[in-house]
Structure formats: structure tokens, C-alpha cells
Image (tube, rainbow, N blue to C red; front, top):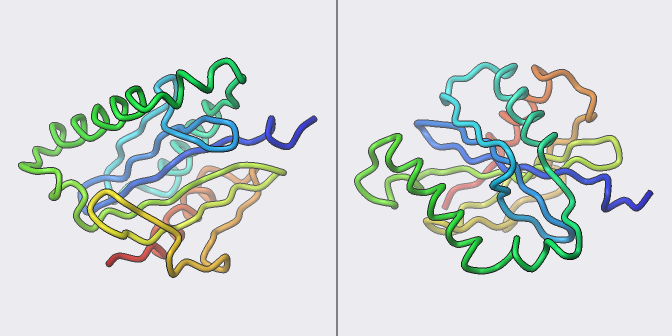
Length: 166
């Protein structure tokens, strides 16, 4: 079976008020998936709860069929999903402005392939942008895909602690 077919993706975003775990899907590139899962947890959530959310988000991830790629990655559709996500978080936490939502926000990219889950911390470049700048492969957290929810949650928290802010 092709390695791409076996991949699953998710994203983690966290600030002082929440940890957000969401499903991502795609093929060679990914984006948030409206058919996936979205969890908004308390920042003090137990590793078990975070790990379970991440397991469910990864389980809902899908490899797109070639005929789905155009509509899934349509710029207008991607922007709409993103703005909906931002709006949901701003309303839930009563942020007066976008900059309040994104201040000190950490982000990790998660992918599951070849029996392992890779959790990659990022560098917070500016308000709504993250990159791999300053992040080394040794900063990645790698854990077996059959790890317990508690172990996966601890791995996610470790990866979040390795995120770099500007």
C-alpha cells in the first residue's frame, strides 16, 4: 500500500485560555477538515484528555481522492473555514480583537505515518503565522501510534513546550 494512503494529520493550537485540537486532511499538503473533529480543551487539561482528543482528530483524518483536491483546497473554501474557526474561538473566549486570540499562541503540526506519531513544534513568526524557523528535528516529539492516550497527551504537551515565540 502506498505510504501516502497511510498518513493521518492533525493540528494543535494553544494559548493561555485553551488548547485546540483539530483534524487536518489532504494528500501532499493538508488543511483543516470540516468533516473532521475539533476539540477545545482547557489549558490545564489532563494528558489523558488531550491525548484522547488527538487520537480522535487523527482517526478522523483522511487522504483526499484526486477529484476532491480542487474543492478541498479552493482558496475561498480554505479562507472561509479558517475565518469560521477564528470566529468560533473569538466568540467562545470573548476576545475583543484577533490579536488577543493569537497572542502567545503555540502551534504544533501532527502526522501519523509508518506506525509513529510525529508532533512538530513551530516558531510563532507573527500574529497568524508559524514556521519551522529555529526548530530542529531533535525538537520533534515522536511516539508510537499505539501509545496510550495519556502518553500521547504528555507527548503533545512536551511538543507545545518546545514551541518558540517571537
